[in-house]
Image (tube, rainbow, N blue to C red; front, top):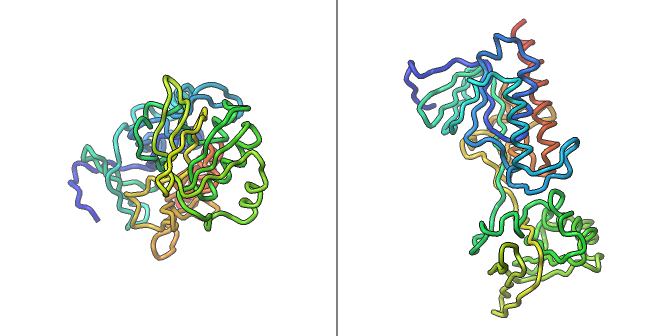
Length: 326
């Protein structure tokens, strides 16, 4: 437990940690479902609003919206402001948490303030595991992408590349094979031991998926847009391949560093039950603490599922609060 100065403790009914779709959905549903008194003591804490969706150049698979990820994020923020108390949207980073006392959960910010809250919704998201190669930032959204479902349609009948050797990479390649003329799947190893058998069979059966093994992506080439890449093989042979896009699928890193004292999956995600409730290391439910979005979802990772989880977490939370208030 961290030590706090009494004068810096802010009592809260709910603290939502995060600023992406899941956190925003939770804020909107809580703002509309909670009493005015509870809303006045509830806070949304986010270091940077928007989350992963802001990196999407063209969002076309979210019902009711078509545009850029940044435009979508702006609309979400306006909706949060309309339903949540503006002064309770805190733009700061959570540096430490202490969930040892039930319904007296401590959340410490980088400015030194500490919130003591009856309940918490964790929606800190995840970030893409990236490649460490030159020009990766230059070509982000100009040839470098991380979501085939989100951006694959931009490259219909073109040649693209997927980097990775797990289920995510195979799923991306399979999806793109139905859109693109040719898909290169590049894996640094020889085998694919982590890939599900059925998925492997489906990819191997696709004639327009070309698998490159024992190789790494080393160089990006182009002008304002990506035009080609250089692949380096383990036998020191190099090859330049013309592609319009590279989809990086080497995994995600959930933003769970401050929650590492609590139950995480093998891949570092927060472990929850069907009600979005979070467990401690003794596999005991932390009453009043819920999780939503990519921080606990290692499978779907879609904006619409994150929104659904944010809604679900709040509905379960409101039900729980009514139980302990009566």
